[in-house]
Length: 220
Image (cartoon, rainbow, N blue to C red; front, side, top):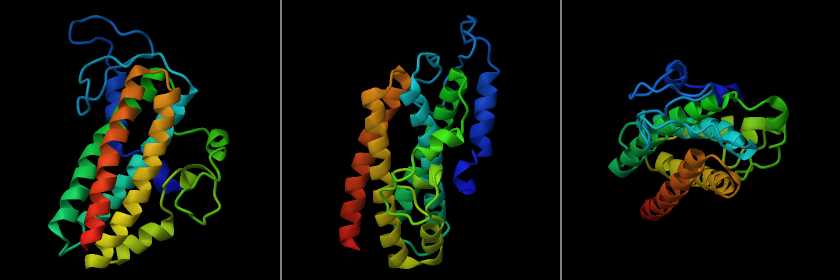
């Protein structure tokens, strides 16, 4: 689905700006293919290690559109009126957390000399891994763990009030569960220290939010 593969302009601009930096604050030169990390994420100002394997690359390439969709879902909710303040606060927090992580993973891929978008042949290998049960039948980003279909997003946009809150929480729980699975795989198989650390952060943060959303869902 094209809407999931488009890197936000801000993230792309950040990646290009980072790629153009040839020296750190101390004036030492970075190695070819290396760059500094986004200032919006942990380890601000540290270099991205060039060490990486296929698991690291796939993790970043998959998690970027996965995070983009979480941001999109959150923006849909923030555009609605008369929502429970707890839902608005949650959607804001998810958007503010995952935006900088998109920039960070973009910088990682740039440092590794890897494309931001997963090659079509690799994306096709993800077919059948859709935990949300989407019926699009398409390979690639639309069939990653926990991703919503176009119909799912359209339904979220069309609902209001408590119905919208319930649907958002249900969808985002599934979305987070998919992200946690992807991050767990990276934590086990990745070799890049920054990517593994980010995966561990995603696991911790999103598992906490999953429980929070389940608790909120029970109160609606």
